Length: 471
Picture 1 (cartoon, rainbow, N blue to C red):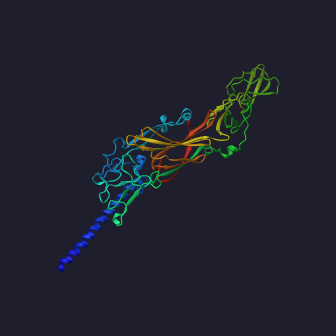
Picture 2: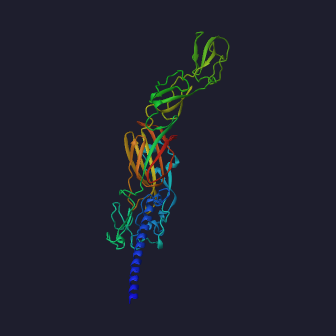
Picture 3: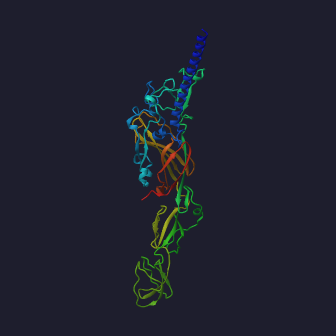
């Protein structure tokens, strides 16, 4: 009897330990699954800190199955449950022709092909987590509960965003006094607006000129201080001379025909005084008397001391003068373009007082719906002192999905914009701008279309406007 009592006591303790170990195993399994799901969404286990699901889809997961068979998180692991037309594609195209860009921009600018027909890889490429038997329960084989953006348990409904998951422990009820009954909560967000790994992007836009990259809306210092007069006809200029035309600064790039002694297209006026000089804008001629010499020819090469005859008088070439033509050229108010006054070549520098008063920064990220794949454009616009953020979704119908978020675009300076609450992942960005004065558009420049690996937290990038957006 004593022996049987001892055996019963040992069996009771063993059974108690076994039950404790089973509960501990279930609890630990629940914690491991919850942590793994959160890491899939938050990306904390990824080497680059980016969740592959969010990067592919451009959003948090949604409920695609509402039954109680371990499928509430099916979008993370079940290839058969996921809509076929949301599967990964190598390139989803953003057609800027139908993107509601400002009408004046479309009319005035020649956008690069990679912007007007931009593409991003996106779509479901799971499974993102391995689930045994194509189901995913907690350790007690209870369905995971899903959380709304406030952290409260939500009723499972199709296409609802999942902001977190919850297990109510061994008793299946909220709360509880035993350690195995405590609730395990894994939230994917902290502010109710998006994933906790949401990103901020600070974009600095610079303009490239011959002095290097400078602030978009402020002229370089030496351009501010240069004092120049308006263009004058028949005036001597040197290479590097500066003039002002309608608040644009032009610099003399070269004299024509340099030192080759090529005459102008205009015949000089005949002089009668013996010592008088006359010029045809390129060459200087001095009257030396009368005689028989060849006549003056336009656009012909002459050297010093060459002689010509105009009427009854003979002239000798005494020098080459880089003087301007007799008629003002058409000055083109476009940075980098050339103009001619018949004798001199002028290049348009950036405007004397400012370089741009219109600036746009466009950010692109994928947005995959229940029926299609597309690209969302977030666009920050600065028109002088007016600032706007334009969120534009194109190329697909959102269907039953509401817009996931409306990231803010705030300008901290004339040439810096701050996008907040973005979805991490492989993204693209583009910037362009121009100077608008009334109905005149000039200095139309854009950056390259830049690929950026957006990580959680603060990201910074500098875009250089160095590509002409004009014919």
